[in-house]
Image 1: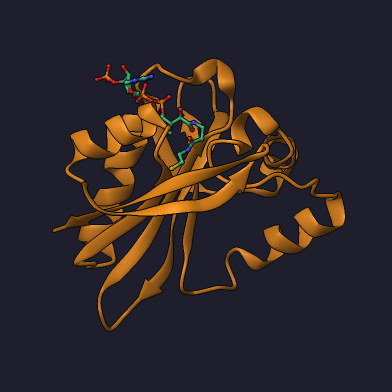
Image 2: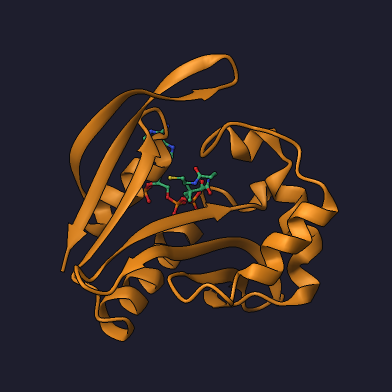
Length: 164
Ligand SMILES: CC(C)(COP(=O)(O)OP(=O)(O)OC[C@H]1O[C@@H](n2cnc3c(N)ncnc32)[C@H](O)[C@@H]1OP(=O)(O)O)[C@@H](O)C(=O)NCCC(=O)NCCS
Protein backbone atom coordinates (compact mmCIF):
# COMPACT_ATOMS: atom_id res chain seq x y z
CA UNK A 1 0.00 0.00 0.00
CA UNK A 2 1.06 3.58 -0.54
CA UNK A 3 0.59 6.94 1.12
CA UNK A 4 1.09 10.51 0.00
CA UNK A 5 3.19 12.57 2.39
CA UNK A 6 5.22 15.77 2.62
CA UNK A 7 8.56 15.72 0.80
CA UNK A 8 11.74 15.46 2.91
CA UNK A 9 15.31 16.62 2.32
CA UNK A 10 16.36 12.98 2.00
CA UNK A 11 14.07 12.68 -1.08
CA UNK A 12 16.17 15.18 -3.03
CA UNK A 13 18.48 12.63 -4.68
CA UNK A 14 15.53 10.69 -6.12
CA UNK A 15 13.79 13.84 -7.30
CA UNK A 16 16.95 15.05 -9.03
CA UNK A 17 17.39 11.69 -10.75
CA UNK A 18 13.80 11.60 -11.99
CA UNK A 19 13.73 15.17 -13.32
CA UNK A 20 16.74 14.29 -15.51
CA UNK A 21 15.35 10.96 -16.73
CA UNK A 22 14.13 11.41 -20.31
CA UNK A 23 12.05 8.17 -20.13
CA UNK A 24 9.91 9.88 -17.48
CA UNK A 25 10.11 13.48 -18.59
CA UNK A 26 9.02 12.70 -22.15
CA UNK A 27 5.56 11.95 -20.71
CA UNK A 28 5.22 15.40 -19.18
CA UNK A 29 7.61 18.05 -20.49
CA UNK A 30 10.31 19.07 -22.92
CA UNK A 31 13.67 17.94 -21.54
CA UNK A 32 16.52 20.12 -20.37
CA UNK A 33 19.15 19.10 -17.81
CA UNK A 34 18.53 20.39 -14.30
CA UNK A 35 21.65 20.82 -12.13
CA UNK A 36 21.81 20.53 -8.34
CA UNK A 37 21.72 24.30 -7.78
CA UNK A 38 18.48 24.72 -9.74
CA UNK A 39 17.06 21.60 -8.11
CA UNK A 40 17.86 22.97 -4.63
CA UNK A 41 16.22 26.31 -5.42
CA UNK A 42 13.08 24.50 -6.57
CA UNK A 43 13.08 22.24 -3.51
CA UNK A 44 13.47 25.16 -1.11
CA UNK A 45 10.60 27.00 -2.80
CA UNK A 46 8.10 24.14 -2.63
CA UNK A 47 6.59 24.86 0.75
CA UNK A 48 6.94 28.64 0.54
CA UNK A 49 4.40 28.79 -2.26
CA UNK A 50 0.98 28.63 -0.61
CA UNK A 51 -0.76 28.16 -3.96
CA UNK A 52 0.57 24.63 -4.26
CA UNK A 53 0.65 21.42 -2.25
CA UNK A 54 3.32 18.92 -3.23
CA UNK A 55 3.57 15.36 -1.92
CA UNK A 56 5.81 12.35 -2.16
CA UNK A 57 4.25 8.99 -3.00
CA UNK A 58 5.68 6.38 -0.61
CA UNK A 59 5.48 2.60 -0.49
CA UNK A 60 4.55 2.21 3.16
CA UNK A 61 6.01 -1.26 3.67
CA UNK A 62 9.52 -0.29 2.50
CA UNK A 63 9.36 3.42 3.38
CA UNK A 64 10.43 3.96 -0.22
CA UNK A 65 9.69 7.07 -2.28
CA UNK A 66 8.33 6.03 -5.69
CA UNK A 67 6.94 9.29 -7.05
CA UNK A 68 5.46 12.71 -6.52
CA UNK A 69 2.10 14.35 -6.98
CA UNK A 70 0.56 17.67 -6.17
CA UNK A 71 -2.04 20.36 -6.66
CA UNK A 72 -0.72 23.58 -8.16
CA UNK A 73 -2.00 27.05 -9.10
CA UNK A 74 -4.64 26.84 -6.39
CA UNK A 75 -7.28 29.48 -7.10
CA UNK A 76 -9.07 30.34 -3.87
CA UNK A 77 -11.86 32.28 -5.55
CA UNK A 78 -12.83 29.77 -8.24
CA UNK A 79 -11.80 26.92 -5.91
CA UNK A 80 -9.80 24.97 -8.44
CA UNK A 81 -6.29 23.57 -8.82
CA UNK A 82 -4.05 21.83 -11.35
CA UNK A 83 -3.10 18.22 -10.68
CA UNK A 84 0.32 16.82 -11.63
CA UNK A 85 1.73 13.43 -10.81
CA UNK A 86 4.50 11.02 -11.68
CA UNK A 87 5.64 7.63 -10.54
CA UNK A 88 9.37 8.33 -10.85
CA UNK A 89 10.55 4.82 -10.05
CA UNK A 90 9.99 3.09 -13.40
CA UNK A 91 10.06 -0.35 -11.74
CA UNK A 92 6.84 0.63 -9.99
CA UNK A 93 4.86 1.56 -13.10
CA UNK A 94 1.69 -0.37 -13.91
CA UNK A 95 1.24 -1.80 -10.41
CA UNK A 96 -1.81 0.27 -9.56
CA UNK A 97 0.06 2.83 -7.44
CA UNK A 98 -0.74 5.76 -9.74
CA UNK A 99 -4.43 5.02 -9.46
CA UNK A 100 -4.30 4.91 -5.64
CA UNK A 101 -2.15 8.06 -5.35
CA UNK A 102 -4.60 9.88 -7.62
CA UNK A 103 -7.54 8.97 -5.38
CA UNK A 104 -5.68 10.15 -2.29
CA UNK A 105 -4.71 13.43 -3.92
CA UNK A 106 -8.27 14.08 -5.11
CA UNK A 107 -9.55 13.32 -1.63
CA UNK A 108 -7.11 15.90 -0.24
CA UNK A 109 -8.14 18.45 -2.86
CA UNK A 110 -11.89 18.09 -2.43
CA UNK A 111 -12.18 17.26 1.25
CA UNK A 112 -9.28 19.14 2.85
CA UNK A 113 -8.77 22.09 0.50
CA UNK A 114 -12.48 22.32 -0.35
CA UNK A 115 -11.79 22.63 -4.07
CA UNK A 116 -14.70 22.51 -6.50
CA UNK A 117 -12.67 21.53 -9.54
CA UNK A 118 -9.38 19.78 -10.28
CA UNK A 119 -7.95 20.06 -13.80
CA UNK A 120 -4.89 18.72 -15.57
CA UNK A 121 -2.99 18.59 -18.83
CA UNK A 122 -1.93 15.28 -20.34
CA UNK A 123 -0.18 14.37 -23.60
CA UNK A 124 -2.75 12.68 -25.80
CA UNK A 125 -0.50 9.62 -26.32
CA UNK A 126 -0.16 8.97 -22.56
CA UNK A 127 -2.61 6.07 -22.45
CA UNK A 128 -1.86 4.93 -18.88
CA UNK A 129 -2.37 8.42 -17.48
CA UNK A 130 -5.55 9.04 -19.48
CA UNK A 131 -6.90 5.68 -18.27
CA UNK A 132 -6.41 6.44 -14.58
CA UNK A 133 -7.75 9.98 -14.93
CA UNK A 134 -10.85 8.80 -16.83
CA UNK A 135 -11.46 5.96 -14.35
CA UNK A 136 -11.27 8.49 -11.49
CA UNK A 137 -13.95 10.67 -13.12
CA UNK A 138 -12.04 13.24 -15.19
CA UNK A 139 -13.53 14.19 -18.54
CA UNK A 140 -11.80 15.67 -21.57
CA UNK A 141 -12.65 19.37 -21.82
CA UNK A 142 -10.52 20.19 -24.82
CA UNK A 143 -7.52 19.45 -26.97
CA UNK A 144 -4.63 21.83 -27.53
CA UNK A 145 -3.08 21.00 -30.89
CA UNK A 146 0.71 20.79 -31.19
CA UNK A 147 1.01 22.38 -27.76
CA UNK A 148 4.32 20.87 -26.65
CA UNK A 149 7.56 20.07 -28.47
CA UNK A 150 9.01 16.86 -27.05
CA UNK A 151 11.82 14.71 -28.43
CA UNK A 152 11.62 16.30 -31.87
CA UNK A 153 7.82 16.19 -32.23
CA UNK A 154 4.93 18.55 -31.60
CA UNK A 155 2.46 16.82 -29.29
CA UNK A 156 -1.25 17.39 -28.76
CA UNK A 157 -2.29 17.98 -25.15
CA UNK A 158 -5.65 17.14 -23.59
CA UNK A 159 -7.21 19.33 -20.96
CA UNK A 160 -9.16 17.25 -18.45
CA UNK A 161 -11.35 18.35 -15.56
CA UNK A 162 -13.13 16.82 -12.58
CA UNK A 163 -15.90 18.79 -10.91
CA UNK A 164 -16.77 17.67 -7.40
C1 LIG B 1 0.92 7.77 -15.67
C2 LIG B 1 1.26 7.13 -14.33
C3 LIG B 1 1.06 8.16 -13.21
C4 LIG B 1 0.30 5.95 -14.09
O1 LIG B 1 0.63 5.33 -12.88
P1 LIG B 1 0.79 3.74 -12.82
O2 LIG B 1 0.98 3.37 -11.41
O3 LIG B 1 1.85 3.34 -13.79
O4 LIG B 1 -0.65 3.31 -13.37
P2 LIG B 1 -1.66 2.25 -12.78
O5 LIG B 1 -0.93 0.94 -12.70
O6 LIG B 1 -2.30 2.75 -11.53
O7 LIG B 1 -2.80 2.24 -13.90
C5 LIG B 1 -2.48 2.28 -15.26
C6 LIG B 1 -3.72 1.92 -16.03
O8 LIG B 1 -3.50 2.23 -17.41
C7 LIG B 1 -3.64 1.06 -18.18
N1 LIG B 1 -2.70 1.15 -19.28
C8 LIG B 1 -1.35 1.12 -19.22
N2 LIG B 1 -0.83 1.27 -20.45
C9 LIG B 1 -1.89 1.41 -21.29
C10 LIG B 1 -2.03 1.59 -22.71
N3 LIG B 1 -0.96 1.67 -23.49
N4 LIG B 1 -3.27 1.71 -23.22
C11 LIG B 1 -4.37 1.66 -22.44
N5 LIG B 1 -4.31 1.47 -21.08
C12 LIG B 1 -3.08 1.35 -20.54
C13 LIG B 1 -3.35 -0.09 -17.24
O9 LIG B 1 -3.93 -1.30 -17.70
C14 LIG B 1 -4.03 0.44 -15.98
O10 LIG B 1 -5.43 0.31 -16.06
P3 LIG B 1 -6.22 -0.81 -15.20
O11 LIG B 1 -5.93 -0.52 -13.76
O12 LIG B 1 -7.64 -0.60 -15.55
O13 LIG B 1 -5.65 -2.12 -15.65
C15 LIG B 1 2.73 6.59 -14.31
O14 LIG B 1 2.87 5.56 -15.26
C16 LIG B 1 3.75 7.66 -14.55
O15 LIG B 1 4.07 8.38 -13.64
N6 LIG B 1 4.28 7.78 -15.77
C17 LIG B 1 5.31 8.75 -16.11
C18 LIG B 1 4.92 10.22 -15.83
C19 LIG B 1 3.52 10.54 -16.31
O16 LIG B 1 3.11 10.13 -17.39
N7 LIG B 1 2.79 11.32 -15.49
C20 LIG B 1 1.45 11.77 -15.84
C21 LIG B 1 1.52 13.05 -16.59
S1 LIG B 1 -0.08 13.69 -16.99
